[in-house]
Image (tube, rainbow, N blue to C red):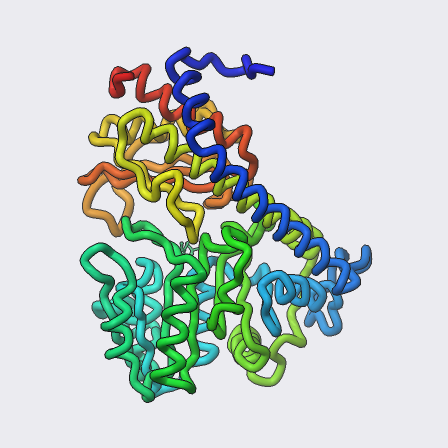
Length: 425
Ligand SMILES: *Cc1c(COP(=O)(O)O)cnc(C)c1O
């Protein structure tokens, strides 16, 4: 049945029919991933004997909060981890990664980032270019940092990694997602290759992964690919669009315990922390996460196919392997970026009637425009797009907790460009 709720131009409808046909094999493959991971999630709930009482609130110190423990167990199972630490108290993905880094690194330790410079918000945590110095970052505590740049075509430089990892390196740090760069994301296969080099050159090292945006995108898990510890944000993939805030750390039992000791105190670790009334949402979010992640992935693949048909350069292409849910579309001009974001906004369930405007966002040397009409502020598992108004006029689009409306959002973005005379078909 044709959807007549939105007045699409015939040319946009035709192009999207063509796009769906072009990427149908990829969409089918994503459905297989979704089926596998969702059933793994169901199994994890049952294995942990999840019960109605676990959804209830605890207060005060939160001693003996079974819901908190069961939620950790569920994430540990789906991530192939020995243990996990899933808390609404993590205020952001950056905070979660920070707790993991401070949890396991000690003064004098050396941290080596092997996938180039990490995501912007991690710079002040590490002390890259002096950022965050004096505020208690890793550098202030005597943790050394070095990085191995990516190759010219923005891939991990396996040879340079081989050379740089010495037995004295305590942590080899990998970022899976492209973040807001143009480099490709890493698949578990590539992560496994890096981890193998790391363990061969420095058998005692901790291989840590920034897994933001990478959860449930593949069947294979980083923790079964040589990674020892990973972390991410619950308002991205693993919170299923339902968790209102929070983060997770997962990995080997001893490392997760150290992270818990950093989050609470060295004596209390995982044993403490009231969940107030948040367990129910976190359980529901976990349960929805494999589906939501794959719907976002399908939205990205569809956008790649549609905009390629419409004559734009996209990254990744619709049929390229993906390790995250982010889609970059190069839109050729700042007017086109603005029109695109306005269209995305029109596809949102919340605030669809507002028009996003470019603004001077702190930390950028140009204006930035953002489109998001989300249930959770700043949630990027919900359909959203951000674009700095500068060369190469690229838009970073991600999310879409269900494909039917994600697809509509992408089509509205194209239509908005067409209506403003910024696209020719
Ligand atoms: C989002 C993200 C972060 C940080 O998460 P925030 O919630 O924005 O603090 C870190 N690394 C990567 C790759 C991300 O995508």
